[in-house]
Amino acid sequence: MRQIVKALLLVMIVVAGTWLGRSCFAQSEVSRAWRTDEEERTIQIYKSSSNAVVFISTITFEVDPFDAFMDVKPREGTGSGFIIDAKRGIILTNLHVLQAAQKIEIILEDGQDHKARLLGFDQEYDIAVLQLVDPPKDLVSLKFGDSSKVEVGQRVLAIGNPFGLNRSLTTGIISSLDRSVKSPNGNVMKGLIQTDAAINPGNSGGPLLDMEGRIIGINTAILSQSGDSSGIGFAIPINQIKRVLPELIATGKVLRAKMGWVLVDTNQGPMVRRVAKGSPAEVAGVTPIERIVENVFRLGYVRDFDRADLIYEVNGKRVRTKDEVEDLVAQSNPREPITFTLRRGGAKGEERKVAIKPLLG
Image (cartoon, rainbow, N blue to C red; front, side, top):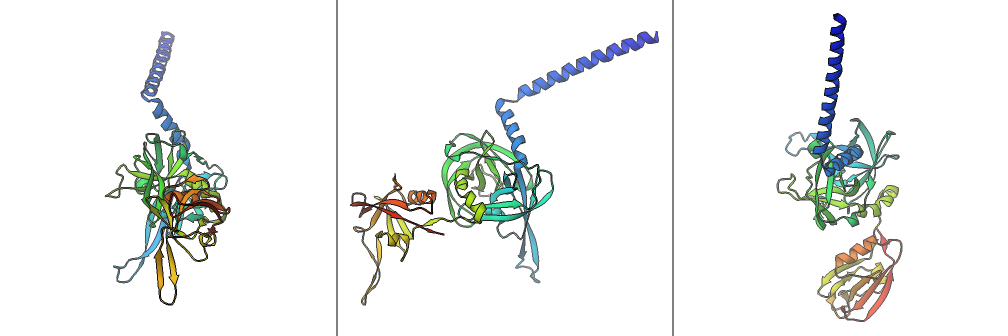
């Protein structure tokens, strides 16, 4: 009798196990069915990318002006960054995340603090490059995308550490392109990507990713009355950074072409307003609108639009504003002469070409 009972119990256990297994499998299949293809893709991108995003902790020592003893007090700050070279432990972030910091610590996905040194920075693009002093061997890095191919309406992902909540993911779309925003150090950053993916304090320096998990920008600023996300965030396009990154890593700074002129927009196009004495522009014979007049009777500027040079092309590309001139100069090889097509007195004036080798600075 006992053997019959044992046999029946064994059969019941097997049947129950089979039923439970099928039930769990069915529930698993149903749960998977609830996820859209886009959700699955987002999950996979986060899993493969989040470990490359780092938490940056900074300490700045400040004197409290309201303290009678003028004690120096530490102020903590946080931000984001991401690994672009796993072998060398190189990290990209925003300069304003690190500015004025006396102590910088990097927290990796293992939760441990790691020391890093500053390789270089660029105020114009508000970027900084760090290198881990002793990088672990199991680091992962993110791949660069092509920000010139992004379009309004395209879905994007932002990963960062808003309010110290490490490796938070937000999603959205590209809301607009080619925006201009003033950076914390006062420079006007041009050509920025606008996104409605939630970006908050602490997200600065984190990556903006496309739906292939590639970096298309660095989250750097928000437009907000409260200081929190209002659905208008800005990222520096990664193509801008790729142009200067090798030089920044190698030398710690970015050398840019300086022509020694001041440009002004007119109804006919960009004209040269002034040129500095001894500058590449003056040496090349560029004629400005305003010239210094020095004699025994008078010292000052005179304006002469009829003789002034209008910039018509830069390296064969038509330009219509001073911003377009400056952008093309910035994109040119600063160690090679830049060819300008000039028209004397306006768009219909006599045309000539000059090759100007810029100063580096």
